[in-house]
Length: 163
Figure 1 (cartoon, rainbow, N blue to C red):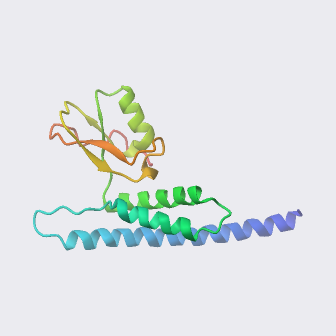
Figure 2: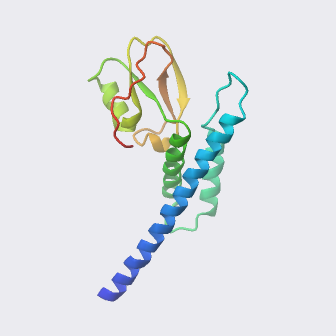
């Protein structure tokens, strides 16, 4: 392959990257609008449901059915999960608690999966499970993370690093 052919391909890739960036940003703005509509349509005292696993499953199924390659279905689904997870975080920031004191393996595991969302869970006696996109937790096949239901749990982020 000549240097000129390579340069032309790189220019094409750069152009495609700009289009992808624009489309992802449009999708993110749409997710923000979804959050606004969901929140505005609530009755007093109701909390919005932002994460809908059945919606995620339907989107991923459609993506894999329409995928024509060269990326495989699993890789394409992983990319879309990541996009959906990032957009969901715009609708409702994730909060992930771990059980035990700082410096334990549970904190390390939580930090490895979703560092910017981790909250320390001190004296937690009960847990509820919040569904999260698998893209938010690449280190596990599960789609759930225990969250603290205790009012004693601190609500400050451990870190403000990007996911």
